[in-house]
Length: 110
Image 1 (cartoon, rainbow, N blue to C red):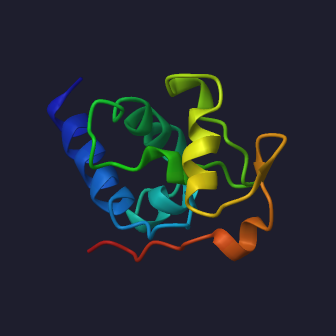
Image 2: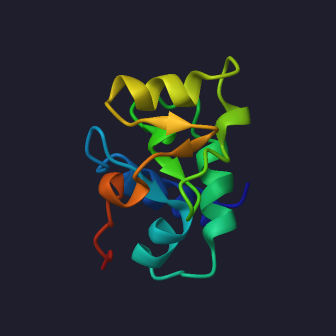
């Protein structure tokens, strides 16, 4: 990983740490907040690399439709879903129920 990737990943983690309990956001919303709207996939790579960081609630980041697309990167078959449900977020068939009610829009970073 390059130095610029490390910096980008850390900026992603700073936003993810701000997601409130019981809320979720999307890869694209994080990219947009960072001023790099076309880098949602790179946000996904950052989330995949975050699982060794206990203070980064990666389970709160989903795709733009509320699908748990990152679930395969969690230990156990349903850990991402369990973590969300523990926070009161209902998940059905790998998708957040009432996604718009749980969605948190990150502030644009300066």
